[in-house]
Amino acid sequence: MARQNTNSGPTGPTGPTGPTGATPAGGARRGKAVTLRDIAQRTGFSVNTVSHALKGKGDISPATRKRICQTAQQMGYIGNASASFLRSGVSKTVAILVGDISNPHFSIMVKELEAALQQQGYVAFVLNTGEDARQEREAIVAALQKNVDGVILCPAPSGEDNVRFLQQKRVPFVLAGRYFEDAPCDYVACDDEQGGYLAMRHLLALGHRRILFVNGPQGISSAREREAGCRRALAESAVLGAQFAVKTVPVTLGDGQELAKALGLDGGIADYTAVIAFSDMLAWEVIYLLGQRGVQVPQQVSVLGFDNIQSRFLFPVPLTTVSSSKYTLAQMAAGRLLDLLQGRAPGSGERLAVRLIERGTTAQPPAGK
Image: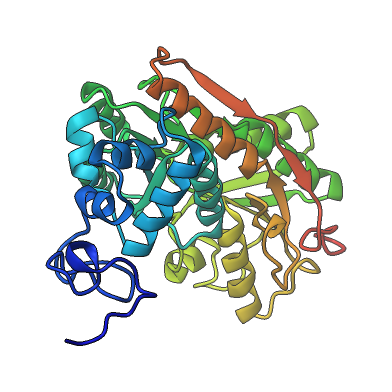
């Protein structure tokens, strides 16, 4: 008979060569999941004790819980989330739906949301909607099919029906970054109207009188409010002869043709001295396209964005931007969702303060402009 390896655990029924099929490498079965009974046999405790220990229940001593959890990890145990959901109706998962995960603004927000939810024992998974209401509905349905406990959604343009769909399904959810006036629900968003006001006031103070706003679709609350803030600052300034034009472009990244058209670059350089962009990433695309035409920023044209993603990334172009705390937004959105999961009645919206950060892409307009 071959000699047993005494360093690999018990022999016989629960050992590496026994009928349970556990492998020497870590105890996990080949082609078959490790069960609570397997862990019980390995540790000598009852199945009920193992179950309580893995769930972190208080009737198990710390020493026993530690031993059982370590053994479960060594054996490669993976809990059955579906079975757990059927027993408790709770999956401890949350779906985060955003428009464009390739945009660092969303990446930062998702990272903060995941961290906030993890602190409360929830696992998050991310779905990309492409800023499209139909794709967003498909993502919501997919999330609900996974039995998520709740949803955090940065809604697509004109996605009111998707918000109502979530309300009809009675799924706890919170909107992050945007909201809809005709679909009231819990949301956390920036004070975008004030953001637009600060952006326009900054450019007017520098002496700009011909300003272009490359904005997102009006179906996005932040697009509407930023434009309204720009117009308020312009009206308050009473600057004679100031010109303010607004062009709508897709807010997903990489559509340089649409953006070039909005900038007037397809027919030569348009007559403006400053550009406000809906987002930082859009602002950097503006700078790139202007540079291709030999236009210097900020010497010839100033460019300003929204989001302050340079708070987390070191980009070569120090962008002037309107900023709000992504950490605070994530903490508040996650906190509101957890409140809803604990039975609190739905509330209303919360606005976060914004501030303008002046860097290197805005300056006084060229002489005579």
